[in-house]
Image (cartoon, rainbow, N blue to C red; front, top):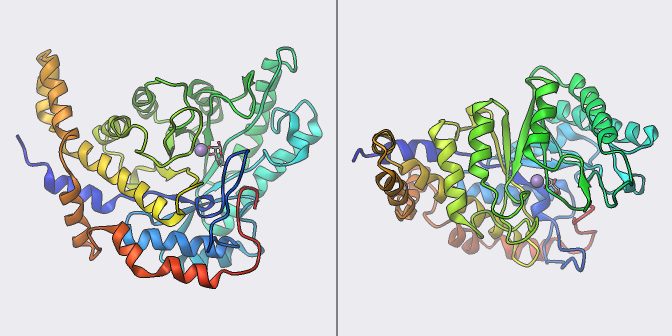
Length: 389
Ligand code: RM4
Ligand code: MN
């Protein structure tokens, strides 16, 4: 068996997972949002918290913004603040789902005036990308219908295509549009971008700067996500990931919590094509909410979960796997994969961290730092950031 450890260490040292700014604000379900002490009151404080995650993991160098939740007067200044904290602003996420006008949809709405408003918001997001230096615009649409006959399914696809084309045309040379799909919710009868096939077809029509985002929580139970990964990669249409876990619907729980084996299988497909590092152009990020657990440790744990699954995928003995596959050795091939999956990679990751001058245990190091107590004492008064702010 070849020693894959040096290679694994090298890739792990360069891996970077983006954090969502909204993970640091209060969040909850439609039943209740539980406020936590010390929660940020503005995007500047969200970046400060995110920087803590990077400080202890060394693997979370960028933060995605959500507009208008992170609206601010001077985005260039916010980008400078991020740089001072040793992080950078990444993907800009649009929001066309929290305005009364969007009750019947945004870019698929039957009324052209509402579609105009939605597209103007998306164009504003591209302006923000220009100011922050972000290269990716992530689009997720809550559009859909609740009742048969409510609207024309095909008509809504036409409107979607037209609006996307306008946004696509506004992108700069180094900017991309990443289209995310989701099976259902908030619409329950039809969703306008419900699956990877729909997203893929729209992206294909738009051109090379449009790619698909896989949010791991946005599939029906039992869907083979690694197949989608392999297919989109092969087609050059995999733009990025929103990592999270789900037990039922789109729970937005910590990645690797529900099904670490699935996460490993996904990372195995990515490893095979050598696209784990930032230069691959695949935007890896977390899309999570920490409703009942503390937020900064929730993000640290999530980054560690991705690192552990990645380490296991990197340890797969590819030569042995290829040999077993071509020999038709079904059990042998499966065993190669399972050997890697069953390896305890925590010592390996401790070495990767030590080489970067980091503590072997990011959770403990953060807990010992006193930052949580500091922000609880300092962030008194003002409006806490949260769902919708
Ligand atoms: C959606 C989707 C988007 C995220 C919003 C908050 O379900 O996953 O990526 O921006 O939630
Ligand atoms: Mn998402």
